[in-house]
Image (cartoon, rainbow, N blue to C red; front, side, top):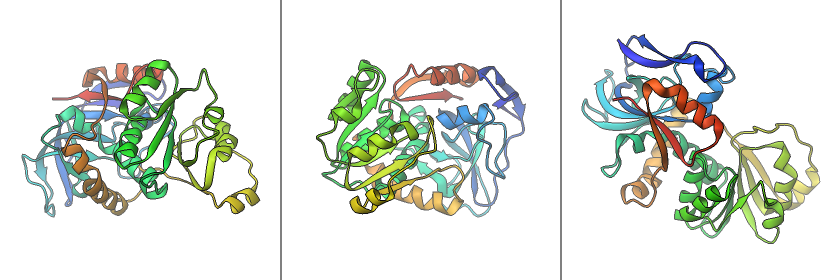
Amino acid sequence: MMQAASITQYGDADGLSIQRRPVPTPRAKEVLIRVHAAGINRPDIFQRKGNYPAPPGVVADIPGLEVAGVVEACGAEVKRWVPGDRVCALLGGGGYAEFAAADEAHCLPIPANLDFVEAACLPETVFTVWHNVFQRGKLQCGETLLVHGGSGGIGTTAIQLGTAFGARVYATAGTREKCDFCEQLGAVAGINYHERDFAEELAGERIDVILDSIGAPYFEKHLSLLADEGRLVFINAVAGKHVQMNIIALMQRRLTFTGSTLRSRDNAFKATLREAVENHVWPLVEKGAFKPIIHQVFPLAAASDAHRLMESGNFIGKLALEVF
């Protein structure tokens, strides 16, 4: 048996509590990970509230999309990993626990310069940023990227990776402290959206790619900012999902609107994405050119406190759970 932070009631953070659960049995192509740390992400909040159910075949009431730990056991068809390997992994759920099963192709080796907490905060954010900014958004060296929510886990990752690959990066955030931090990470400027209109501030800039989690309220501003051939990439729409647009303007300026979700994608897609991340991002991690920003670490038993902090927005970077 193992301990897990489970959703016992949908709603506020008090609905998370520690329960005893059976240790997962890895399938043929899965590894069983003794979890040392788990990253916390906004989808975990949505799942706890009952708005983001786990995909079929994934444990329904234990959140957690990314973990780091040590391989405890391997399924019969696992080829790359052996017990004792240090890995971090992307999961469909179940990460808030002492053990988690993961597809072997969704695991990455933990670089020697990272501890378990740092490694646990990589998979969900790095996979999301690499796919949306670099694969769907096709960000190139010398282009300009605008990142909303620059001080969060996705934002701090996008700023660092965009800068590392030669882009100019602008970011928005809700306090001067957060904006300053975005600039310390490499952003040309952090724009406090409570004090200034980002569209007015950036009106003279060429913006090639925008990474947006806000949705409808920013849509017209994004149209005004995007350069010809620009790409608007949605990873959420927390403030509204319905917009109207002038299709002719899209055609004349050859704009691309795209977006994605990650959790529901099939195993083959995630395996291919893991390979791209390992080839392109892991070398930066290994030489210290990119690392996750950790704001606070909570014990597994305090998962509800971690969720409250995430919902408050009073943090910079990532929040994590320490399990062992």
